Length: 212
Image 1 (cartoon, helix red, strand yellow):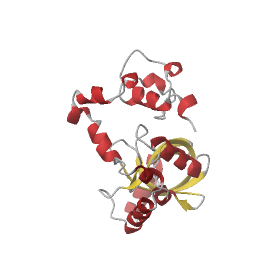
Image 2 (cartoon, helix red, strand yellow):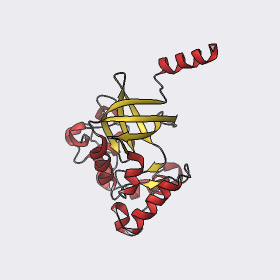
Image 3 (cartoon, helix red, strand yellow):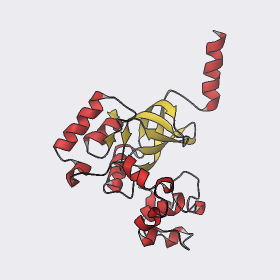
């Protein structure tokens, strides 16, 4: 009994609840959003799916899809773990709809089979692929895990600078007013370390461009 009380107390004060409800206040991409828990924005990574990166084909559409499902709504969240970026890995429902599964059904994300053996999600991906929904309309879309691997300087070295469009290489831009697109702002934040673009520290730069 004493041990159970200690565990409950630790969960409460650490801000970690296995099941909770919070309003979605930001959608970062097709598999990541933020919801309020006791007044604090918690970044959530949807479990068992992997959406295209924002710079990839259908990256923006995937983000818009997730936004249409959840932004401004109250979400039911089942927290499962934390990843290496300190995001809560979670199963999310918005309006009673299983958002993880719906993104795959719409063809806006892959079943992340490396970390999940969920047969239902695999079936939804196969259906979306057969019906050529979303990203599957483009023939053979590049999985985001392959895209990230190519974008890793540790694996590509100088190849990274050749693959990134000139307009997105690190240059003299420092302010949101100098950014032309949300994708460019994200690149300067994440690849060039221009933290001043993220004024409120929520991981989303230049909200006039990137906020749905």
